[in-house]
Length: 324
Image (cartoon, rainbow, N blue to C red):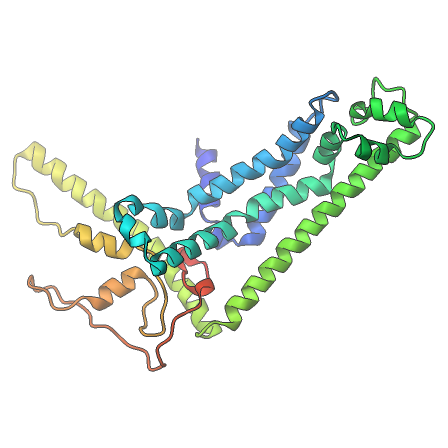
């Protein structure tokens, strides 16, 4: 369980680790997986077996990426209670933008899995020798004397046993399949890298704030999230201890101030950055918008920027969890 918790902690910190580290860990996992568990059955299950090993782990990694993202649950929590708010175009745009950003982060691990698996070639070889497409099988076997025999026994080629096809012909077919697989793998790598570069370029070119301010924003959100987690645990422990102590000692509970439901809702919503103010999160905005309260608690006034007002493009709208 301790090892599992360590792996889970690493997965939940994928933003701080960076996309490269996530891809590297996924690639290493795929290599171990292919050696320890994969064994092509060399029968009519080849195609299904190969595609399951190629795509199902990628799907599991994608779903895990959604599950471990705080922004997913910020977007979905309570949405059924605010269905009327979803009808507005502004709210719908915010939700769709947030889901797009979650998806772009969650796709790193599955794309890495598929790319490494294709470059490795084992899953693709097994899957494509189990196809029932006669034209494709004929293309693989080529213009050889044993073409018909090759098409009939194509599913046996990955195992290398139980086939009467000449060894040279078998090697040629497997090399062709591996070449196709590796071409697809490198094309996927190039597509992912190019898409990431283009999205980053668009985001930075349309950014109304400077590069250094973006870095500061990212650091602020990371520190705020860490402090929020530790302070929430500490405050919850204090409240629980007070209630337990009061229950067993039959004494009046000590006064501990806890945020109201309205306050929690203010800081739990998705944050849209705007140059109209100098806030970096919903918590920052909530603290900045507080005024002098009836209970005497000092509230901080809003601090405005000197720049003209303007909205950040959708691609830069959210930096929850330190992602810009």
